[in-house]
Length: 91
Image (cartoon, rainbow, N blue to C red; front, side):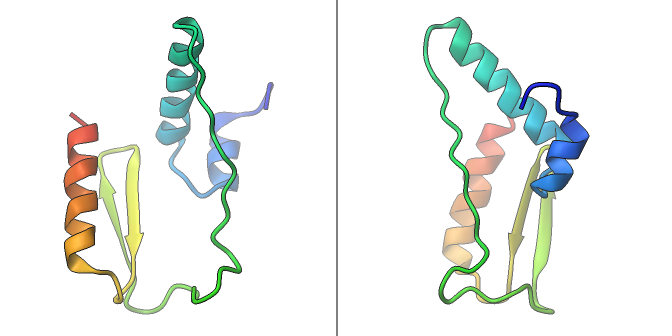
């Protein structure tokens, strides 16, 4: 939203401010090349089968702009694939 403060937007959506800056750069780059970048609103609250964070949850920060949250039920192989993919994004 025009006139919004990045830190406030990040807090409202529970993401790191650097991630919001990253998305803004991607949007500007897409606009400059004539392409389009679409960000879709998403909410995980109220999904069937989802429970609030449990005592077994962890948060993994990969650099300043990447954060992954998982709980004790996470599939280890899938998490490994996600972390490897995110590791290649940050390079």
